[in-house]
Length: 112
Image (cartoon, rainbow, N blue to C red):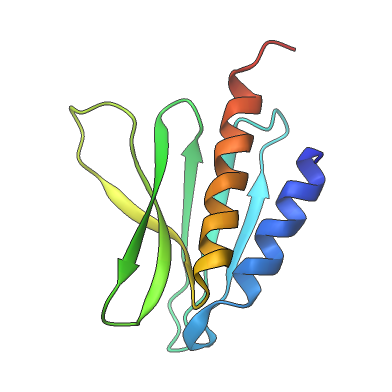
């Protein structure tokens, strides 16, 4: 899977987000950081940037929304931030997105 195919897959999953609150993704030119934009239906979009060298990803479950989620978290234990980068009604979508994000991260760490 190429970087553009991974990004396309993430965006397809993001547009199917529960609660009519889509997620949108963009990769930096060097493919080593991800811009995430969340657009809840009640307004007030949120945008964040994550450098693959400083974050990790884990799966979780949002009981309030009843959705599976992928969260960005600090790669080092010194920081404890954890933010959602995807919410999905379907477990398989969240699992696939988690795998794609890990592939993107690994590709960034590999020498060119």
